[in-house]
Amino acid sequence: MAMMMPFGMLAIVGLPKLGGLSLLAVNVASAAAVGAGLLLLLGQLMRGERIRLEPSAIAFIFFAAYAIFSATVLVRLFSGEIMVFSLSRAAGGVRVSTAFLWGKVWLAPGSSNISQTFYIVLACGLFIVAAQQLSRRGAAFGDQCIAWAAGINLGLGLLDMAALDTILALIRTASYSLMNEATVAGIPRIIGGFSESASFGAFSAVLFAYFACLALRTGRRRDIILALGNGLFACLALSATGLLAVAVTVCILIVQIQVRVPRQTSRGVLLGFAILLAAGGLALASALTMTDAPVLIASVVNDLILSKSQSASGLERSAWMMGGLDALQQSMGLGVGAGSLRSNGLLFVLLGSVGIPGTAAFCAFLCLAFGGRAIPGQEDTLAAARLAAVAALVSLMLSATVPDPGVPLVFLAALAVATRRSPVTVPIAPRPKMPHLPAWSFAR
Image (cartoon, rainbow, N blue to C red):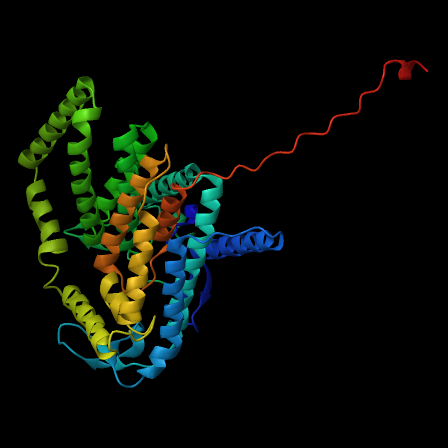
């Protein structure tokens, strides 16, 4: 399932009548994992074994239950009384600004309530099953899954960089708008196996955060290569979401280096790091002084960050964000239902969709899943999962439009839970021995 995450545009099933629901490969793999996990849990119940639910799983179940309640009851309770930005681009509605075409419509039940609730329930089931299985098999298994996902993401990024669209067309099968021709200041964006740069940049930033933290702690060659590769593609995606997630990650890593280096690093390593840093600084200075890189970089930063809020897209997303707050206020803090509105930023999406109760449950899930201490030997994996979760949350806070937490964040939460549990070792029954026969019995 984790290895399907880089295939962000590989669709297995398309259900246009259910709010444009497109079952991606990662969704189908997650559903299969949930089904298999539920069968295993059912088998344990039939054998009389106790099933322990993590406190974080209970919080997630409450979040999913409230999402179902909001999508079935609250949306009908406030139907026709609140105006929202619809998830459907064909909805039209009353325009609220001359800067963009999107308008508000009266709240009403729709197929998007079904699709978004499905994603939330699927994420809940995936977390429960993944936490159970990773706790049994050990956090090292989850680490290997993420490593495979990072390697596949690098491969898809290289294919896109080489403009091998014929090969990538085999996995870009979802009914999304493909943005593989988009550029920033004349520089083409890299999107890998996703439909647009924001998703690819955000996912690459999450992988960069995970392996950069491990590389800092372990110094393994695998972690260094995967961190550098995915960090590079997070930048080459030229998406404000990925770039800001990388920036936050780098700032946290610098703080960690300040804390860890003085007491854990030898003088030789420090000298080598200083030489590498000086060489990199000289190369960067040469590029800035001998080429047109400063003008190009300034243009990219201006397009992606400085003037973003004044662009039509920025004004549109600001309106979506305020629409989420308006829905929260007019619904008296209850929310208008999962899948009922489009907002911007995970916090505003949650507040507008599932209100204060659902948002509180989701925050409790995050605190319970990523809090606590790891068992001896798993501290590095827990730290990496936490930093990767920070990168994922930064991306979601900037660009999320629906309350679905996403498979990467859910898998990282399950991995964090697994680092606090010792792997379950199943005792192997001794092989039966042949009965001892006296030697004289063969002579007869």
